[in-house]
Image (tube, rainbow, N blue to C red; front, side, top):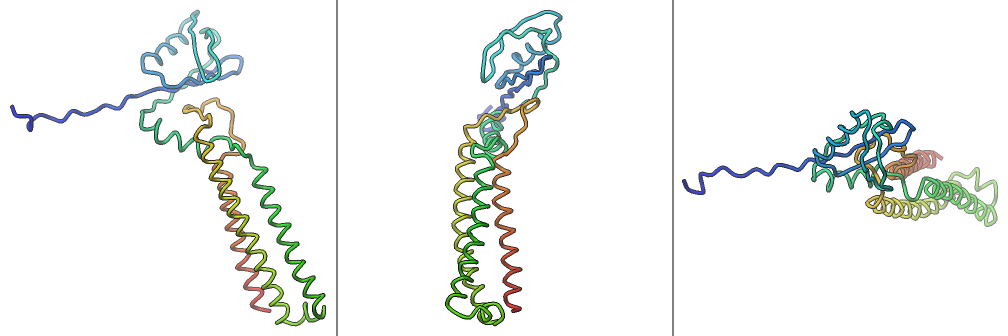
Length: 221
């Protein structure tokens, strides 16, 4: 039979297992990269009345006693998940290396600088002209507001660039973060890298909407 008639050989993806071993005293051990045989050994140990096994996780090596195990949960995954999807999970859902405070401070600084900038524009306008004209002359008020908005737009531009750079740095740092494949029993993430990115997006959207509304009001003056 010629080689053309031979059926193509299909490559079967290697399945690996990630375990979360819940101990009766509250601790959870996370073990990853196990074969089916290695996974079965942990389940066999949990079924025994008295048994022990050497277990290694990210942080330690210890003897695991069967009577200390309360529950074992398992998640199966393949090499594609490990190399493609899991790095994205770490980038998006792991605990932020920068935290939320730095993003909050930058946004608060933008608000303060915007107010100071607008007040400075009105202050200079009142020094250079008549106070009554600044607030009650439509053309003068509109021109003053326009100058103030220009300053705020510049501050906003610098703020957005800074926030985006910080988000990119935070996401890149996530590639080396610890994020268990089996999250059962892991400590909840307080501020994920994705949540910080969403804060940045929300800030941009809210400012854009506020700018449109203020522009509409300024045009009516």
